[in-house]
Image (cartoon, rainbow, N blue to C red; front, side):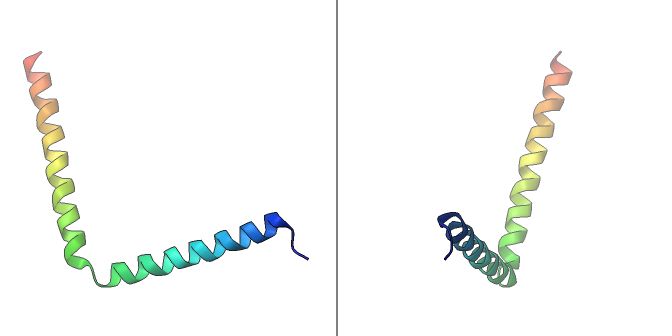
Amino acid sequence: MMSEQDERYRALEERVADLEQQLYESRKGSKGLRIVLYVIFGIFLALILLGILQFVSAS
């Protein structure tokens, strides 16, 4: 007989396996989405750098 903790652990393992499978399947077909995310991240970094440069040049 499994203890309650063992059952919870097994349920968590199954959930993690499901999430890994979903992640793998979503990565296969979403190259365009990944490019969009990289572009947004790049713009975000550029804005941060510009803000830092303006702050440094103002002082």
